[in-house]
Image 1 (tube, rainbow, N blue to C red):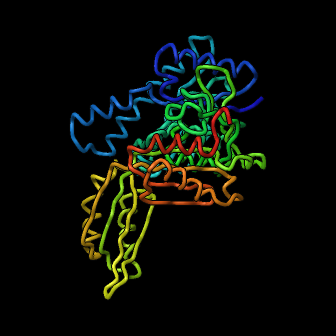
Image 2 (cartoon, rainbow, N blue to C red):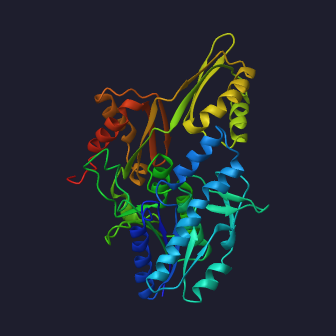
Length: 408
């Protein structure tokens, strides 16, 4: 008997018939002798509908009230799934974040999980019930409802799997696994049978939308095997697990692109110790992540620095005022913003032991006439910032150049 966590995304519970399908899948797993915990997202489109309602009330909704509003989508779907299991002859119980006791910090709309209590889950499991947990939500120390940010149900599922020591966490979605790149952009993309936590973490952080980055972080930290599969068929998907020697066969495992970032270019900062720290500390205080950072120093009688960095477009509007205030205080003469950019990245464990991968990537892009605006690297990743209009071309060219297609 295994303890199985199954997570179903918004498209998987997007209609009553699909909710019934989830119930049948869960019951089939239980009849195989397993104990089953489901984690569900809001029905597809529901969270956007709720956010749109808030925008009709006010342009800048209060973050606490936004969480109270957005969490209701998962409350609806978890109750409906539990009812569907019961209607199919099974026993089920729905639990909201505060009933499971998913304790988070108080960062509304992007809270982080601190602890999860398992008593309510095991109480229901011991009664032979399928437990249906509302994903995406938790509760802070003061009892306020919090949400975990976009894709937070993935994080809920993996964190619950870690907390109850589940044998596996199945992530059911509208795709049948992790692909070498987005099949909508590159038709020759192929499904990856097995990928390491490390590679998946890089791909998730670089724009691949199959798994939320924090869910992969938790899976890697607590060694929770994750199986990404389709909710619309019974085919095997992609296993995300510890690094395997066989995984190093491919130099590049996956390619991702991301158009959700904006570039900020600050010119004329005084070139002195601590100047960059002041700028990025101010950004960190606002709980905003910065990605690619490039600094150039102009050395003359009075050396000054130009700093370029990327950050989420969604955060740019509220960040501009205090970026400019801090930058001017550091002597900046010019601040420019560019939202028409894309980050294109290659990821692979094999890059650790193969020389010349960066040169090959740059040559492939150059042959397509794509100019690189910034570069960021890690041991298993290379990212290039390019004009947004070239994003799809860059992905297809790199996919072909590194021979990652089905026919290869």
